[in-house]
Image 1 (cartoon, helix red, strand yellow):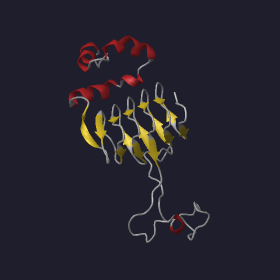
Image 2: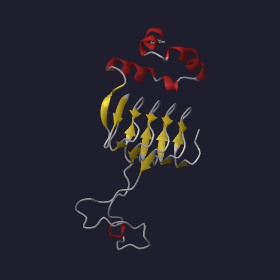
Image 3: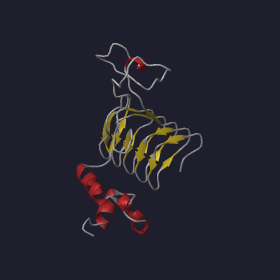
Image 4: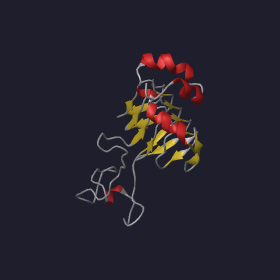
Amino acid sequence: MIGKHSVVTNTYLGYGSAIVESSRIISTSIGKYSAIGPNVRIISGRHPSSKHVSIHPAFYSIKKQFGYTYVKKQMYDEHKYADIENGYLVKLGNDVWIGDSAKIMEGVTISDGAIVAADALVLKDVPPFAIVAGVPAKLIRYRFESEDINYLLSLKWWEKDLKWITEYSKYFNDINSLKNNINLED
C-alpha cells in the first residue's frame, strides 16, 4: 500500500509492506512486512566537504544541475548507494518500522526487524532488531536478546508462505511462545 500524497520512485516494495501518507521514498528496496510511517524521507545527494574548494556542483559535476558546469568529467561521487548493483540508495529489510518524519541518508541499510523512532535522522547502518532514535540516530536498545535475534534471523518467518504464516501467526504475540512452538529444524 502507498498512502496519498506520497512520492515513491525507483523503489521495490515487498509483500505486505506499506508506505503511509506524505512520504518521499526514492531508489529504495523495502523488504516484506515493513511499515513506513508518514512524512518519512530518503535524503539523497552529497556535496564535497573537504579537499574540494567549492561545494557547488558546477566545479565537480557534469550533470549541469544549475544549467552549467566547469568540468569535462565527473570529479565527485554525488550519491552513495546501499546497493549500487540494483541502483538502490537505501535498503530496508523485512519487518522494519520507520516512525513518523524519520529521515534516512542515502547509503544506509536498515536490517531485518529494526525500528527507527519518529523524527530520527539515520546516517549509518542499523543492525537487525535494533531500535534507533535521535539526531543523529543512535542505538537505544535491541528488541530482543541476542539468542532470540539469532532465532528470528534463522527462522526468517517473512520468507514463509501465507499458509505457514496464517497457521503460526497465533504465536507472534510472544517470542517465547514462538520459540516453544516452532522448531527451526521443522
